[in-house]
Image (tube, rainbow over all chains, first blue to last red; front, side, top):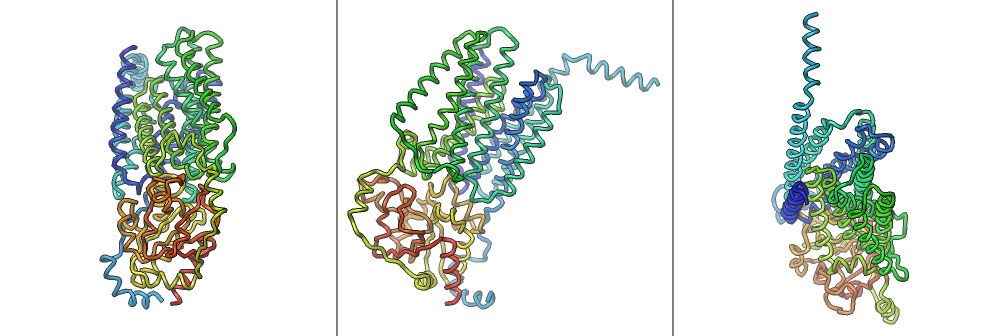
Length: 114
Length: 490
């Protein structure tokens, strides 16, 4: 085994640990955005496809590269946009005061709205 | 004139001295990748708190842009035409999907997106393999191992995700498909993949059969993907989607090993760890092991249970909209338990309207979210957030289970197995031991239900026969709208 491979293995294992540590702290509330975010990030294969599509290694390479760039870009752009769209929706309760107050105030609210 | 000469002279020296510039380029690329990796990690860390999450994801997106721009400096890239075409077309499709797709379709979109990511990784692997063969000479064993993993994980994620997409979208029946010798065939294929893997790594890479073995590996991966998801029922989708998420990451990581590219390794490892962790959490929430989900063909009706349903005649209590409305309007504590049925009926907006009406009458509404409610982890949270339910009203199972005994009404909307007391009481039940929401401990229970058909897992739910429980039959969306109107009229 050459040294590069060993170093790559280090990078992989340590990054996996970092990922594990962070993701255990993500609340269940955000598990769907988390998945679409990691999905967008795994579109990093784009980086590999770019070289294939641009390196002029013949028509087969370019075709494979082009499809790969397109697919990975769908993944990246779609993933980040949808994650943002989801996260935009998560809002804290903006109503003033705790809920118990509204038990007395509710008839008034009802009149105002109807 | 002199000026022009000077300029061209400068250019000439700039390009002639290609050795130092290519080193500079390489440094720039590597620093871009380092920055991208850091930004990805910071971005994911943002997701640990809802109010920091958007900011975090923007950092991660910047990281992706930095990685792409860095790569464009790569000395092997000579033409940018096709890159540009791919980027533009991909961005257009990706943006279109994410703008117009309804939130209820998030699981499908995630599944198909995994397929796209895996397709990219697989094609990059194939291209790289062909390139290395074309260069001639022996390909290193480590590179071959990485390429083998890359195309195996990549191809099985492609078909697996497409299958999951088909099941979630209703293109293929989502009921588990089982056939004779299923596990034997799967194990056989797996063994074949292992043999191929060794052939690829240790075989002579310039021989014709080596390429055959390599493409056979792709074929095996594609077949495994189909067979892996075929026997898995809709209710187990959260585990499968998480697992495919993890595989897509591992494929990206393997690409990184093959291309000696650290940002790919890191991003893939983050993704792989995340998907793996989520699938463990989902399995735990169903009290099942990984192997059980993958090989158990769960939704296939256990015959004993089906027989038991037929033999016992129990009665359920149906309730009218008016009576249910009165019950809800005068309740002080209401806990809503949403399930996949709410997503199917797209009833999340009506749920919020109903909650507003209950709150106007002085009640308090909370939402109890089971980890596997819906078809992917966190599915219910997103739908309710879309309907403007504040996220501090959404409670995880452990947080809210203690509050059910104090609740006047538990309103179960399109949820079934996650409130089935059989998970606690009946050791013979297939879901025995699965942690559930204690809706049965509420003072009264109202279940919105389409019909008396058992739920997705085909398991009878004894909650419905509880004397405290009343059922409001009909489509969840229209039932909820009727409830809102009825409460307004009170």
